[in-house]
Image 1 (cartoon, one colour):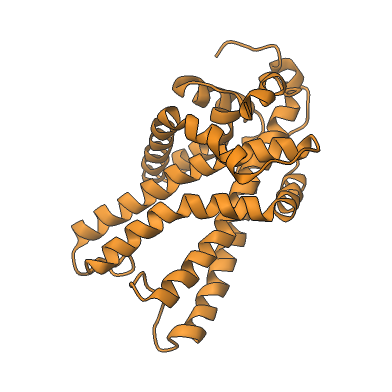
Image 2 (cartoon, one colour):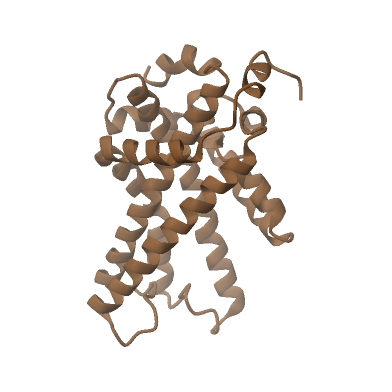
Length: 268
């Protein structure tokens, strides 16, 4: 890849601070809780509705024994849709995260519409990102983890820097250079934390809804379904905040680059 003017600046800087990114993620979540969770709800609704539709047809994502083919296709569909919507959510939230960094405040509609306008590019980027990550995970796990760290910030880049499909992946690869092990650690800690929240909420759900059941299912009963949706709202909300905070930490290593000059266009 051709060297850019900011490369030497970034290479001279230390890697990102994992603790700072996590603390700033919590701060973003605390300062903009309504907006973050509003965007998170929008991102998780499509996959939740798909799960509900599958459940009404007798397809459970917690029981692969009935039809392995049907289960595998359903799981793949839900995973791809959820991952693509996650990329969309990262792109939608970045405007608010950048505005907060500069002492400004924006509403849900203001931060959502720039991502909606980028959907024709965002959807193929999300699909490529998801499929490549899944294939990488199947190839002895390591390639998927590498791609996950390398392409961690494609969503924010799409909106904040108005890049095309190829340029988005190249830019993410550029920004994460020399700090991917830190990004991997950040994603690992986030994964452990969200897994713990899921475990605690699952056990709380068992006490509330069905103490005899070995696990909460994707069945169509309203109460367990809504409870699990609440769990995803909490964990995915932090995930969106973390990716946007990570992007800001990365661009600061480059002196912001094209982001500063294009920030005004995000809310045009």
